[in-house]
Image 1: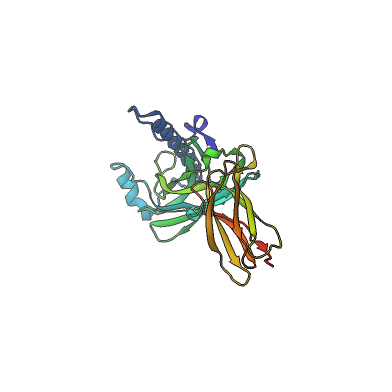
Image 2 (image 1 turned 60 degrees about the vertical axis):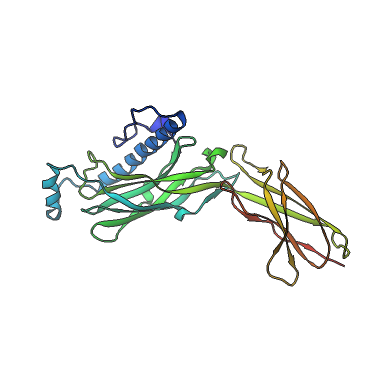
Amino acid sequence: MRIRATVVAAASGALALSAFAVPASQAAQQDGVHAATAHLTGVVRGIAEDHHTSTVTTKHSAFAANKAAVANKPAVITKASVNGGKAIVVTATETKARKIPFSVTATDASGVVVAAAGLWSGTNDNSFDPDENSIACKVINKTTTTCTGSVTLKPTQLKNVDATAWHVLAVAFGNDDNPDVDQPGLNESASTVRLQRASQLTVDATPEPVKKGKTITVNGKLTRADWQTNKNAGYGTQPVKLQFRKKTATTYTTVKTVKTSSTGVLKTTVTASVDGYYRWSFAGTTTTPAVNAAGDAIDVK
């Protein structure tokens, strides 16, 4: 994760901040994207330099001749994603860096030498960078290339506020670009991907066994990862479905919906009828994934 104050000047490809006055929250987000852009551009620029040769091939001599009179057009990002667009779920106790896959497709009249993606969020003005050694590119045709690799996600640097939609920032250099001086093609928000706090759900139906017609009490608790305490914490005031499956059935049906307490606790009662399994089912939110408790068996006598 990169903090904006330390990376704004990290690369010569950084975009200039607007001179116009903007609200503080918007300005903070602009700082975040420009910092992420600066750093990711620097990373990809370095890779492009490794592949770049000062001699322009005969095939691309027209680009060299035209460059003196007309500014070279940057590569165009046509598609970019991290984790295939699927939410990235992080537990409370993760400490090891995770490699999250990315894919970037870009086009340039001269072909594309390299492309990569990173993640940034305006919430804390931070970013996660691609692993330079992971990047591999496949030429689709003479103008289009798809590059894949991984973004390094460091769970220990996450705060709870980071459970949100992160922007996928993509950068690409064309074959005719001189990475020392030319600007890359970039898309500051080519797509988004959500970071979510891992969820857990328990269930306990009692008594066991129970006589038909008697009351069954179903307890449970909904918790989710707290990235700042590295523990799981109750998820309060959330609607959770109580579901039942007969012993001979294969699917659950919803009995009722109950809201969790302020600490994530669930409790309700039902009348015993037939043997089967009770479970709680949480549909999820934008910050927390859906989860089902394992079914708890009830033996009705």
